[in-house]
Image (cartoon, rainbow over all chains, first blue to last red; front, side, top):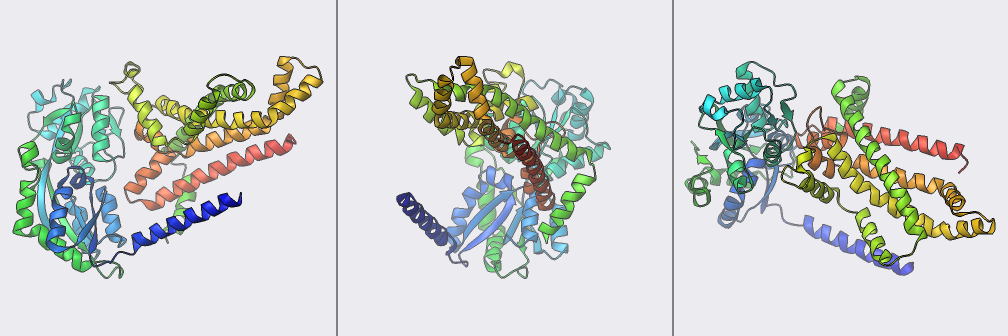
Length: 277
Length: 230
């Protein structure tokens, strides 16, 4: 028994030691970026951040969550900088004094995906009119629309589109799953249903999917990303200097060029179109 | 501050009689209780059998069961999902994202716990009870009845532990159930979802409701044990 106690104590010490090491890193050299799952899932950040670190020596720790939680993290002062795609919420965030200023960084677009067989013939009937496409799914009585239902930027965009139809999406055909984009796409695939996704996440998963793009190219599916430094007055842990450097780099010619480059090799086209002013 | 608000929110949730919240609570109970009952029916006899009988490969089997007792729910969820998915061997049943799928995943999680704990108790007390039964000249069936009677409280503890695992896990039901509002959304998946939406208050409030339910169920079992003088 005493040997066990000894072993256990040593293990505990090792754990404490490791934890201690983890928290002892210097604060100047790293920032916390709260962002949406789409920037992480698509691989954009994996591509950009090492180059940014090489240029500035600043390590970026990414917390990829839904837009709702990303903004919440900013409000709580748990992050230094936000990269999100829900313009109204972002502007409200700045207006409430949680953030310093919002800058446009880039945009991508949403697409409606569904089963390859397109059982409702949405493609044929609606063309690239997204609102009409949703109406067909709603009225079919047997189609399934899988909604993220997690207050994310994509979910908010989807709700805007339903609002254009002037209806509350409710009923057996409408499945609100409260999950991230990747998870939602997989559920749509499994249920042979339709869902709205950002193009980047869809393309990054396309190798494992049978679902195809049903509707694309409608200007209503335009998706603008903004970047905001969290207000440094929130607490003394916020690394504002690093956040500003990161924003400047993202908006610089080099950053914008790299954003444009991303995805061209793999998918034959940019996943994100830079548009910093 | 958020914690205090959460307590207020928890009471609101309980007394508002919001249909959505009650649906979630009832589905949680339905799924976890169903899986616990099925696991008990399968696990208790198996545990007793393993505790009493010796056969080749028993040691390996016991080790496998002990390992399964601590399998991460996510792994179980994934394995069950791959079997029942549209492309899987049982795809034709159309079970994905339904409550039965959640029950299946939890049965896979809970059964090893029931088997493992019952087996342990039978090994510990079984031989004594058997000797006593033998001395009293009991036949096989009478011995088994005596054994069940003696192990009553141990079996109850095993079942409660299994139920605790079922009601509290999130990984497996998230994968096979899909957290669909009004259809497969249970308390743990709601909490995970609310957290991901930044609604910490309601998440903790639901967590408190979950704790309260566990407390009530444990109290009932404790009182039952005392009343029976076990």
